Length: 414
Image (cartoon, rainbow, N blue to C red):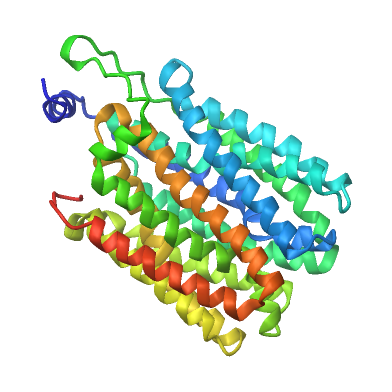
């Protein structure tokens, strides 16, 4: 039986889930997304501030954050393979274990001054753990959906952005009032809250398959997998380029804000405004994908990434930078749910978890490696303006590749 027929038969045989369970699961999943992105804020948005306070140079910071991304690239396929082979271990427990390890390891940075090698090891572990989590949190939503428990991913992820936005302002103020080291206990506490939500969350049943319905083992040859899924491969390349440009701006936002005369509090406000703008589009994503499909939305997202990067280059002051954050809505706001949906629907059933991991590796992994590494060196050698010009060129290339890759068949929501 063909893969499409198997999928159709499985969906037709799925029993409706009681609405009470559906509401409960959606609340639980929303809590997980909210807590995780609250925990991600300290290391995703304030790591540069923390490292600068310990006298690391921009080049050293770029290397540390690039190593974090490289570790994530290496870890995610391995974690996905482990999850695929050990289906009796709920994915939520694997994610919880990653977060516990990251909370413990990151706490050590409190005792480390300007020591490069220990910091390198810490950020490598952070990449293999907390930076790898989003792909598998996304996969949990897809598991629930495929088990007949509909999860509104857009709303859940939108609430994650809301928590990120609110906490961004609070943490920026706390840093100005109490010092940079407050980042460390804040991260550990938020990670453990996420673990608590994960472990109390409903576990989707493990599918019992036999005969024609028995899932095939994923191909181990990555090149063969990408060659069979050309649109998906192009999407991954575009994601790497777009997130490279995003990393140039996101990682080194403290330098941009300082150049425009802003403070750490202003940086927190900037990030919070951007995160808040992600919220509306994620809430209405279900409507948007029914009307336009994930392919078209990814093209719009790619153009918006380019527009935001280019306009940041010409920002005359903090007020303009604040207003510019509205582009986070069609850029990152659209990309996040569209990428999850496209990765789930553009590959065969047995490759779904793997596809989520590879897409995350492409964007958050390879993209961040390029952006962090090149950004740090460009800042130290040439300065801020050449870095932003280079970021704009990379963003345009990402948009062009996305535009070409998303041409082709259109199905409902796809």
